[in-house]
Amino acid sequence: MSLLTDALQFQATHREQLPALDLLSSRFDRFGSKVLNWRELSAVVRYLAGQLRLRFYQADPDQADPQSVQANARLGHVIGNDPCDVLVALACPVAGLVEVPIDRAAGAGFQQACFAAADAATLGHDEKRSLCCAAIEAALSGTMSEPGPLRSLLAENDASLILWTSGTADRPKGVVLSAGGLCCNAQAKWNAVPQTAADRRLTVLSIAHAYARTCDLGTWLLSGCQLTIDRGYDGWLQQAPRVKPTLCNMVPSLAQRVQQRGDFSGDLRWLGCGGAAMTEDQFHAWSDRGVSVIQGYGLTETGPVIASQSPQTSLPLLCGHLVDHWQYRLRDDVLQVRGPATMLGYLGESGLMQNRIDSQGWLDTGDRVRICQQSGQFEILGRSDDQINLDNGYSLDPLLIERAVAAIRGVRAAVVQPDPSGRHVRLWIELDAETGTVEGVQLEAVLQRLPAWQRPQQFHAFTVPDNLRAEVYNFKGGMKRQQMYSYLDSISVS
View 1 (tube, helix red, strand yellow):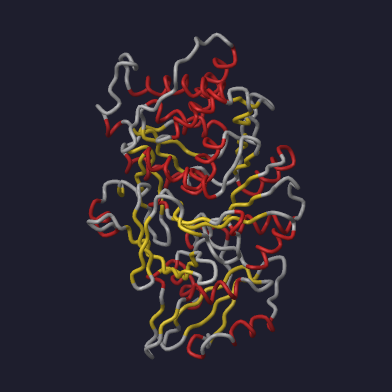
View 2 (cartoon, rainbow, N blue to C red):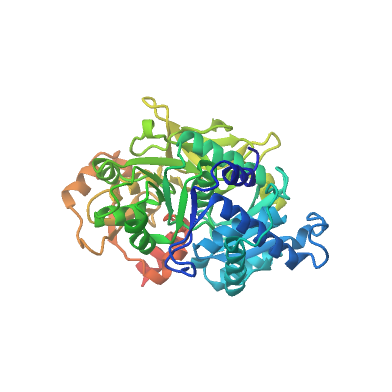
């Protein structure tokens, strides 16, 4: 299969009566506990795609050339993680539209700025829900004519999706991904972690971001299993007891909250973890409950999966082997990759694209990586631009120290920062609100393992207010280092 629309058509043809999309979520209960089967889902997508095209082509939509108004063929919508969002995502390529999803949690100002930068028409919440409900009702009424094969109006090399990433920087960038690249990357992930039509997938990460878009939606379409969608920790609490998922993807902070609660579904067999590696304690806590933790690595710019573990290669603190279709090389320990899932570019920023991808197609990830000699898996050491160079000639990777300290019971987060002299570093520790203390013996043991020049000379406590967390952490929990340093400087002065 070269396109994810082909996967949907395959399921509608070969698994037409099997459950596909659960319509019940905490924010969408119009159709009660109805679960669309694959044939019904295909019909809904076809109807919805026709309605979306009418918004762009006032003449006969079947005769309109979807490439003729490329700049205006972008459809933006706010993602709250309910079934309507999934239906629009599936309908856009069938309508010949480039989808521009924005996470609701990003806030109204960010959403409007992204829509404006993308020159996208916007589909409001009420209109989206109205169109989706009409499509579902039409498909379920039995009055629709027998449909022909479902097909995408976007070719493999066409832009299909624009996702927004700030990474560890302060300015979001529109990452343009191709229709073929999205399918290729989903297939690579599916090959690494095989799933079947008997699985039940619960999606609680925003499908406005690359991780859930490929590792949830993409692999769902390829596997033919049932999908339930909701958002975050509350979504897990709402849906997991009802659907008893066998598969779920999370980021480490969410996985920790679910694990600490302890009453998660006993049917869960694989837990995907991305954004960062779990601590060893977290990893083993899940393993002890019979759940295989599947860790991976990638970037929005790579669709996103570059490396993934499989159930047979699940190990703590590592992120797996290279998945299909990628080549890699290391330049001074910095990972560069090349493959068909690489982004088409940054929206409206050709210069930034040239700085990131060379003339031979090698994309500089900016991440320092080493290959584990025992397992052959990737281990992420940190960002190349995060390395701290001290005035005494030594250098260190703050992430390695921060990760070790954050694994100590009672520590919510740790930050290593150069002190004002430039010769040493200081350690900032944010305590877990529930624990309130840090085990000093464990902290001393961690620091004693470091070379003398890496050991912090100053120690400070800090707290990031909830209303500022989005300024210093990205949605996956990764630190925006310069913003964090600025915040810490501000509270140390005050």
